[in-house]
Image (cartoon, rainbow, N blue to C red; front, side):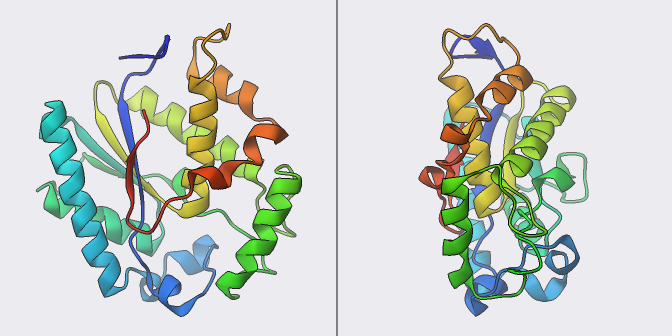
Amino acid sequence: MEREGWLLKNRYWVLRHGKSIPNEKGLIVSSLENGIRSEYQLASEGVNQAHSAGQSFLKELEESGLPLEKIRICYSPFARTSHTAKVVASVLNLPFEGPQCKMMEDLRERYFGPHFELMSHDKYAEIWALDEKDPFLQPEGGESVNDVAIRLANAMANMECEFQGCAILVVSHGDPLQILQTILNAAKEQSESTHDDLASRIQSVRTPSILSQHRKFALLTGELRHVM
């Protein structure tokens, strides 16, 4: 598929998980160890959001003329994202344990470090202020914006390698999806770039001035967005 003068094999949508139990409790749950725990899955409102997102995605697919066999759902291993992906798969009548749904660890939540883990959501303001100042600087023991950009670029490369001509729904978290949109948008805008492949373009746009602006692409819980 031609996209702004460069070639992608698939079309991409992103979906932030529905409202989770950590969201309701106002907790930061960012480590993989805590994130996979069932007690941190979706709240009832989040299940409804995921169901609505699945219906919206189905409508967009029908309008685009994309058949159900060409749908792929790639999701983070966290309980809140796998729960969201499972609800969406049920709306689309896809077997969640089947080949069209794939867990990808690179889509996991950004780890904010032990200083922030299980602390109040109010702490996010400190992290985002740090990101704006220097997106290459890691919160103590955690991941920088650039760290997340590197693994999301790897996830994109793997999806482009494994799938062709598919509609891919990427189910992940707020910060990772903001960062993913930031690097994809910047890569797409390189109309005069000498790089024709996605990996090279993403590498060239992983700069402080671009990565520090990731908050511009914020998503609400349960929000679906077509990105490519």
